[in-house]
Length: 161
Image 1 (cartoon, rainbow, N blue to C red):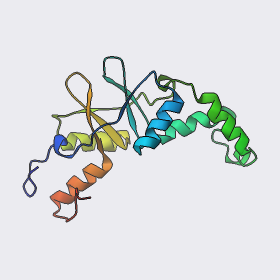
Image 2: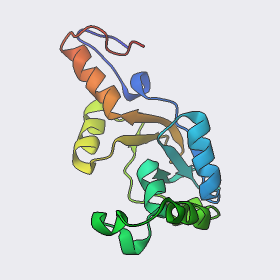
Image 3: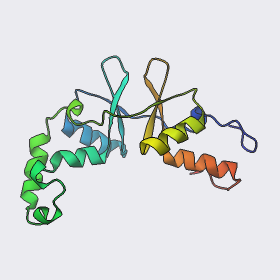
């Protein structure tokens, strides 16, 4: 990573991706996210190519009954027992059935501007970085993009701690 005048690449700033296969259960995906202290898992198929992502929003949506979705008033009257029952009901659901499928990836050789355009236009918080075969090699987030902008502006503390 060169800084002031700078060739900074996606490879320089990407995080290591946490991956999970699409045949893993909701329970095991939840457990993995909690144990790894992560808010995203890149979902891969049997060949190791990216096919989706899961995040806390996708997990939470699974335990909200359809009849309550978008109805905060009705939800006020639902007990914690219903919440527990819904969590238990979906425990064996496979990741492929609730993962976010409409994700966009960037390749490790793409420019940071390409990653910024994808982030801005897709609204994705985390973007998988893939190799030529579509296999995950990294993850770039809005935080890394924010820090790159900070480096360009000469702001101290970017990419530290």
